[in-house]
Amino acid sequence: MTARASERRLLQLLSNGPAVYTANFDLSDGTCTGTGPALTSFSMIALGGGEYECRAVVTPTANGAANVQTRFSPAGVFPFTGDGASGVYVRNIVLRLPSTTTNLFPSSDPTNAVFTKTNCTAAAATVPEVRVVPQLQALVDVIDVLVNGRLTADKIIEQSGSGSPSVYQAIAWVIGQTFVWDVYAQKAERTRLNLFSNGACAFDCTFDLAGGTASGSGAAFGTVSTQAIGANWYRCRVTGTANGTGIANVQHRVFPAAGGHPYVGDGVSGLGLQSSSLSINGGANILNSPRDFSSAAWIKAAGMPPVAANTIRYVGALDPSAIDADADDGRAALVGKKWTLLGSSITAQAFYRGPLAVKTGMVPTNLAYSGGSLGIATNGHYGSQKIYDQIALIPVDAEIITLEPGPNNFGAADVVLGDLGDQTLASGFTGAMVDAFKAMRLRAPIAKIICLGTYSGGPGHATHRLFRTNSQGNTLDQFMRREREVCEMMGMGFIDVGGGSGIGYLTSTLYMSDELHLNSVGGERYASFVADKLRALSRVGFFGT
Image (tube, rainbow, N blue to C red; front, side, top):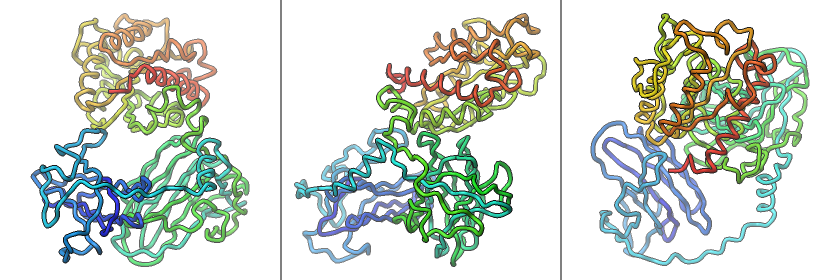
């Protein structure tokens, strides 16, 4: 809903029945709160001129009908005595499903008769103009960060010797308070960030700033997630609900490559922090000096060197280097897309997955199965059809799916190649590809599907390589060609990694760690090649409707 204060300033979105929630919005100061078992999140976006987009994201807890209501009042109290003249300005009302733009209401106009009015009227009106003149220096600062990537990030450095490096602030918690903590971080010599609190708000969450993965636990823990921002920066998010009342320290902790605190540091290694924002009950950031970790507002663990302020380059979303090239070459359609990965151990490992997420801004869900094949093994291989089986786990709102069929079909499982025209998993590899594409479309109807073509292992690999015939009388190049043929026949996207990236039989010593799996250099080459091809698909409208 887009709204603006008039004589009344407090707006409320609510529902009963199978989707119980209440979200409150202050249209004067831009703050919001929310409660209810169906309420996933709530937010306000300032649109200028006093207008706000007021949003509640809701997940129903049961089936059934319920009234979706909008209410307003002078003080957030219901019922109240009105004067027959006061109200709020509402520009539009929209109800939609995730990842769609269709309004489920018959109209977005609150004056339309489809909306039932109770103890109020709705009339067309002209909103008084409010001149919006931003302060020039603040505007210049924002543009400078977004376009040029000013030095706005700090480096947090570990101690020399044994210790537990962290920077933190003490927060007063009340049981039941909900929170969202966003930290923008980048790997340096250390690649693991731990966000931690104890006591009244206990959670323990670790983020891999090299691979983009995260995990969490604790009595107050709710969810954990990462989002690739660009140039190896990640937004690290923790949400949850305070489990007690009292003081607890919210800590940014530097972790070693393995294990946790304490550990022996070298006095120079660390990681980058650009900003930290802790919101309680949907309010504003309560942390002091959220972008200056060198300030006295942040307590430093004993033995730590001073924070190296403003020494790491932070890039904003419009900086060309943030997503690895010019902003007008097709990459905009990829940024923020929900990306599900299916594949073998080549995908399960993070060597191309992490760099590709950074280069494109896609948000990954990794469902790869190490040792898996897409088709049914003829030799009892443990990974038989395990890639296919993962289709049932694809998020239904996935927007991009990449399928890396992998060399196990040929080299480990000895899957029957099959014939063009096969359509079932049981008929062999060809039918498995067709069957898989159909199943993906049913599981995630809006997703765009791209196959990442298989590359050959090196001459030293026993089975997964060119110039070898498997037990079915087939060669790897036949499987590689069949991947392209099925994609062309089915209208699916195809990126010929094996035929165009330079990764293959004669380059195994450069790009592979064991004559098959990628090393870090190979992962970077794989990711760069695929990112470029995804942008090419974007330029021709592949990711459109």
